[in-house]
Length: 150
Image 1 (cartoon, rainbow, N blue to C red):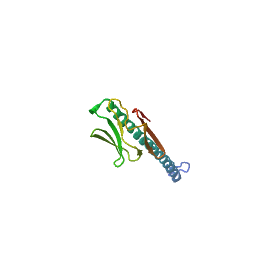
Image 2: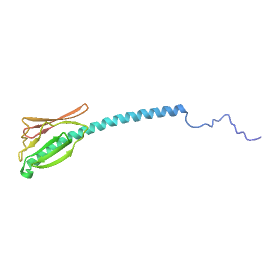
Image 3: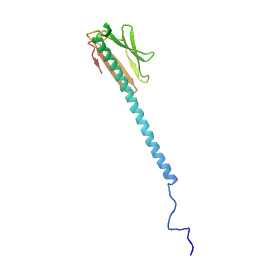
């Protein structure tokens, strides 16, 4: 009696069929595509919030410096549309901060805070700054007393 190399009761094939592999790849592709879409939306929202918070922070920092009478001059903030930069200034001293070019910023004119009082001399009665990106819009309001509302 010799060795029987063919045992019909045992299936020696292992692995996946081509159909199973294609279905698995299709499901993974759909999941990755959905994840990419959601992460891009998250990034756009983060970019918008960051730009709004940066503008508010620069306004509050400038007002704080004016109230602390640093340089014994009024302090202010402007937005340069040509270079997409925020410019914090007092006298001839300027500090430039790069803004994101992905958002639209409508900054009507300079916001200047009086020394010691922090009142806004260019905000009568209020000045509205609009930051927008796609469907998102934020309005930052500075009133004549120098209060920054957002």
